[in-house]
Length: 308
Image 1 (tube, rainbow, N blue to C red):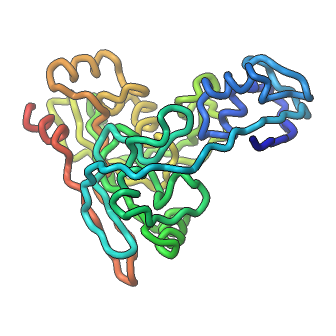
Image 2 (cartoon, rainbow, N blue to C red):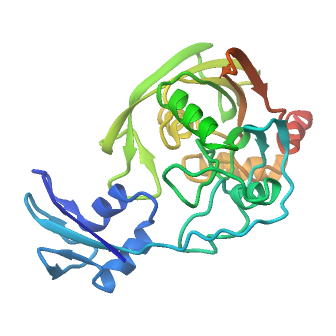
């Protein structure tokens, strides 16, 4: 166990479970609630309830569990677009987590497990020991292009160009209904939802950060479905999904931000079972020259277009 202690500096009362889960985003609200129940989280050295409101200058202490970093290699098939001695570019399948998530079967069945098997355990780590080689991520149900560093030098380089926004990312998204403008930009601030730790929002979020998404319509199916090409200028959690839902054009079969009626119809008629979002390509400077890697659509998205 490792204890973190901090003073609340806020004039607006906030629930203790929401604040802790926002500051320590690797944990869910459910896990935080368990910590509160066993008194691993104290306020002014006293036990609290999960809905306790924190006040200005309250002292919060959190006994944070340190998880074992032993992650087993697993023989899981990888769809590799490109590989050399320093870099792997994957076309990630939907339905698989990029890296282990603490608390529930967290050592198994992820891309990290597969990568450890593929590289015989030779992957670098900078800060997150359960994420060797990982410099960016995709949601579990998003498919497409993903970079993996195979040594420290490449990991430092990729981390730097991502931080400095010197890498171009393009996505394809199928949405419910079709926006009127062919080319437009969504510019807002995104942060954690105050009342649901699992969601991000543009409406009065916690710890808001600037988010910019450029969008172009490239296909329109009778106004019912649209295929959008998306240029991410920033890279916030769930950014594309939240932005599109916020303007009334949610990604098809997005279980969190989507339209329930449209999703149910799409599943019944088109056999869709995951959000129709695909990281199509990545472009950046590599070995002193401009490179671009493109990830072909996965079979489920191909079937969707062939079915219409």
